[in-house]
Amino acid sequence: MHIQTYIDQPGPIPPEALLVCLGAPAAKPAGRVLLFTNLDEKDLLRAQTVRPEELKDGLHFLISREAYRENKVVADRIQRHLAWLFCKFVHYPRNANIPDPCGLYGPKPPNILNEINRCRNAPLLLRSPLTDALARARIRHPLLLVLPGPSLRGLAPRLKALSRVCLVACIARTMDFCLGNGVEPDFLVQLDTGWWQTLFLPPERTLPGCTLVALSLAPVHAVAERFRGVFFMDSFDREVLPNPSRLRESWLSSLLPCLGLAEALAAPLVLVAGADLSFGPNGQYHGDGPAAPLPAYPPDSPILVGLNDFTVPDVHGRAATTRLPYFASAHEATLFAREISRGNGARFCNITGEGILDPTFFPLPEEDFSATLPAVDRAAVLAKVDAALSSPESVHLLKHKMKLLRDLEMVRDNLDFLNFCRWRKQDAEAAAHPMVRALHAQGDYLAQTAGLSQGERLELAVELLEQWRLSLFQARNVCQLEQERARGGLVPVLCLEDENPIEDLERRHPGLRARPVRIWRETAPAPDADRLPYRQFAAWSRERKVFLVTPRAERHFQMLLDCLPGKNWLVLR
Image (cartoon, rainbow, N blue to C red; front, side, top):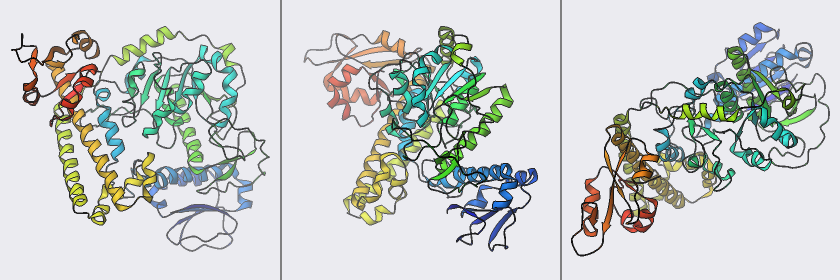
């Protein structure tokens, strides 16, 4: 499967690949051919009927230089559309952590890292609203999107002034840029599900004015309490949380859910910074490397779209370098901007003035927005955000709990099989197991596992499945806690003698009632029912559906808690 472009004369093309001819070829090519000889609006409409299934064995372009010279606008639009279709629905879904909506690659094994994320996010997923709640707030302020392209460095002197008149949204990779220039963003958009994403956030810093807008599979469980709250882009399970709302987004680029956030906020003006989707001859996209001058793009030259780096005209007509995912993202950004503008009249602007976004939809700035826009009343914005955050979704808790128990049974079965293979030293048999075979395709640090021995891959798969099992226990406990909340139940809280967790529980978990439990270590009878004799602790814990443990009690009784077989406890956070 490949994508390649030829000018006037075709190169080697596999017979199963689709050849798209833009302009009449000199001789009729063999194989699967799609001809666009007129390069007019009818041809463009016909190109838009092509299905991804037709591209699954490869896409090749054969462009007539003469026809291109006469009809370059339509030729470019056809090429961009088909390249986007190939990249989004054929090329990217080969990865285990990317959806395959067309089913081109058959059933995929579960992505273990994503499943662990989903389970660890459980306290947030069951209590946080989706982004349609944010949309109902109708915040209606200009929005500045801070993306990590090479041109972002030029925004630094203007960022603070723009933040006075615009809300600011960034991604994890640009958080340091915002904070380093004295601006706490209003929103952090988290699309990527890789665990490494959390490393971009400043350790231990709380951001009380910043709200997370995250994919349900994103690793936000470890950082969410440092933010004002979380809105999720999507339902984590439509059978359990049946809200069909989904933020406009795409797995191609974090730019795209940022545009979706602009739509949800009803932003009348969207300033896009650092969304270059191209780079200079130094080959560097992220970071602060020197900006090299670009030569002019040759006039009337077709774009040689391929899988690797290729040259495209940027917004100033210069020869910039891009890659297929960037090229496809630029096209989808145009689709998003067109649809959002039709829906709410929003205007877009490429405020850093570089890159390959379509200037028809993302024009370059013609005014100093920091001087012409009114100041943002952030207190009023935060009041609307808080009101939206206070409306959790309706979740079918019993159905959710049953699905978690089925997943636990499935993970246990797989662990039993792989542990048996490990005990019998049957590394080759274990290597054929779907969850072992697909490790390297699941993203994040697992991409480096292809070079491991069969035994090492087996060990890694067992460790990951064990982490999934433990996170499923935690998700089950969270679900049980929510059931207790729904019926106003009394929840035991294991604490130390000098702790009173009642107020903390009511603040963190409104609707729950606490019953403090303290372990009695003396041989004399316990003085009251709130003291639990040490030797009875294991039996007592088995009889509980779920109980909470204060952070100090967790550290104090760690050995006891780690040995409980039911894992039916949660830390009070």
